[in-house]
Amino acid sequence: MKYIIASILIAGNLLSGKLPAQDTEFTASCKNVLQTGERFRLVFSLNANGSNFQPPAFENFRVIAGPSASTSSSFQNINGQVSQSVTNSYTYYLQALKEGTFTIKPAKINANGKEYESNPLSIKVVKGSASQAGQQGTQQNNRSSQDREILTDDDIFLRAEIDNKNPYQGEQIIVNYKIYTRVAARSPSIEKFPSFPGFWSVDLTERNNQLEQRREIINGEQYVTAVISQVALFPQKSGEMKIEPMIVDVQVQVQTQQRRRTGNSIFDRFFDDPFFNNVEYVNKKLVTAPININVKPLPLSSRPANFNGAVGNFNMRYDLDKNETPANEPLTFKITISGKGNLELIDDLNTSFPPDFEVYDPKKSSNIRKNENGVSGSVSFEYLIIPRIEGEYTIEPVSFSYFDISENKYKTLSTPQYRVNVLEGKESYSNVSYSGVSQEDVQYIGSDIRHIQVGNVNFHKLGTYFFNSWKFYSFLLIPLLIAILFVLTWKVQEKKRSNIGLMKYKRATRVARKNLKQAHKFMKEGLENEFYEEISQALWGYLSNKFNIPRSKLSIDTVHQTLSDRKIKRENIDQFIETLHHTEYARFAPGSKEENRENIYREALEIISKIEREMR
Image (cartoon, rainbow, N blue to C red; front, side):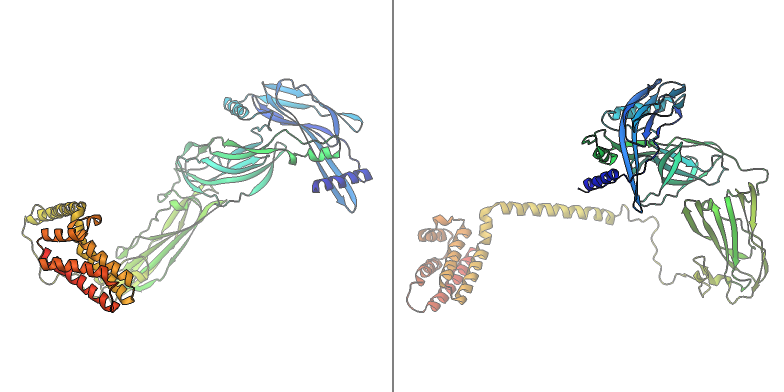
């Protein structure tokens, strides 16, 4: 709806006659230097509404796609004065076929009742590489020129830009991997990152999701650029060296050639804007060209003896914490090298201290900064020195040599000569121990002799060992015996569990007592029916489980016969049967119900206990 309103306002301004006239221009533009097989874009632009476009004959060039027509409009309203800018473009994609200098003749178009001609174009075609032609052929096979806009190598490409192709050995050089595009692109991802053989490399890329975009003009074309990776390289040898290509995958937006039209009116021009075209993203692989650099060797004639490979621009700071100290008291001597260059490759300094000074390995600390300008910062060496004998001593200057890039010569930085007065100390040499590089880490033990073994000493007979002794084999056999015992026990238990009759026999008494316990609970709660049901379950269930008799075959006769076969006493058999009868008739018997329940419970518990004792 808002587009229709905007179109009505535009049409109203046009009809009101407030749009000032502008000079009509019809121009042609493209690259003027090409390689054979290279594809390029040719655009005819008209700053008015035209008709009857007539292209020239493209001799010595092959037409891949076109013309693709598009219209763009812009309006300005300043203090009530409305101005309009309209551009109609006709785009061709061509391919150079052979070497030479060729002319593309003017195209023609009608506008404002007149016929206009574009400017002719002179194009020089030089010999191209086979790899470029193969890449262009692959691009053509991957997309249909009739359905979508053709992407050329000029639309989007990747460059490796180096700030110095002729550095000294060890000199810092910076490589920027920059993407150039004049089409919409997204999601660049590095598929292959170079390994940089022969270089010490430091990644300078800021790891965030934002790429800083800029605009640059190349061969008259405006590109959006962004650095996707930045590396500082330090060549470790001289001679010809190569920086391998980087491969980047990127998604590029292309437009289909289907446009929406409603008729020959201002609405045509509005809806013909490229914003309304169908777009899609295609994957494109970008590859940088390899870079050959020539690394110059460092001069040999003027090289200092203490030079250790430092290259850059550096300065030195130094500090000795005190010039006078008692013997066995530590001193701290700190030297800091700062500047820009291969700082992290500086391992140690050439130092010389008096022989009566005990010097520990230096503590090295680095403060390295990495940004778009390269590697800079500082590296410090902190020496802990302990004078052992009193007297006056001299600490000779410590020198550091490096190759200065700005002046192309060696330079040497030195500390001053220090004089140290060592006084008589309170502690002897043997009383000091050291566990670090700071003064706080120096400790005084306080005794001359340490770690004397006292007490009884256990001696072992020579030739007697635990290996091959009886204890050794005992420790080997005990776990095996335990495992065998465990397996046998588990087998026996498994066999018992498989004997259902045996398991019922063992659980009979426990199940009966459980029923009697529940019956006693029901008796306390006054639940009469539940009480007699549990008593019956206890008696009949005990017989069924103990003698493996199915419940369906249980009867008074079966009870009498089974107990007689098990040699149970006659009086116990009669008491068991009487208890069964009492249970069945007790709930209907006259008298105190509570007294009957107590008698039945006591009889059942007593007879089961008697039979259980006889069965043992």
